[in-house]
Length: 260
Image (cartoon, rainbow, N blue to C red; front, side, top):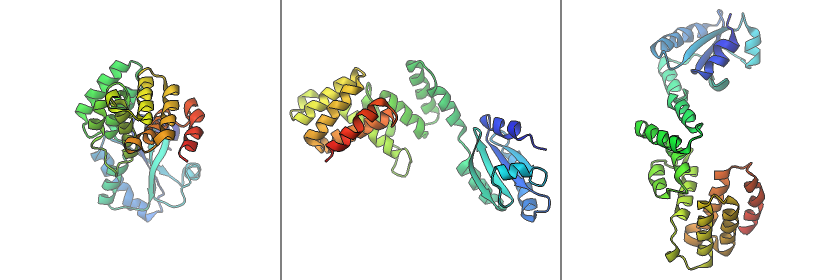
């Protein structure tokens, strides 16, 4: 009998766990099972296989809404992140695993980002990116940390994040903030541009409240200034802070009204 809490839920915080819900009378289960076992052996260390006999443990089948078998569910950090039913051929299984298995390096990245020493986090991020140059989540994380104090690096860090990538929108927002932070006083004479320069100054002092006020004022004056920079930078700041941040709640409606 599978001790599900220990062998699956808790274990999935250490390594992804693939659970095969099966039964002895199920023909497709007898086809799928040996293929899963072989793959688990070949890919040992990347994920673990746990087999649940639904005849012996019907409560687990009911808990995880197993309507037909074989049913395969991939657990990661205590939750089902992907699943399929039926007996897939080996090549489809390999493709499915390749597509859905969590990247082990992502756990390392989360550990880095949980650090409290900003300088150490930046150094570790740079080292991580040097070892995983295609890891767009890490590149975006470093860009987020540098956007106000070293904006010239942001374009380089986000250049490879293409439109098909789920991170593309955030990359564009960080580039908008980098554009704001590289404005020069000598180049700005319009009222909207002067507000943007003041917003830049506020951001350098970590005064996000004043910065948002000034960005909204610039949006009112000329939202399309320098390629919609007032509007883009405002949206980027709201997303940078997060939907639940007090300043987002305070200024979002005012910004929305400024667009019309």
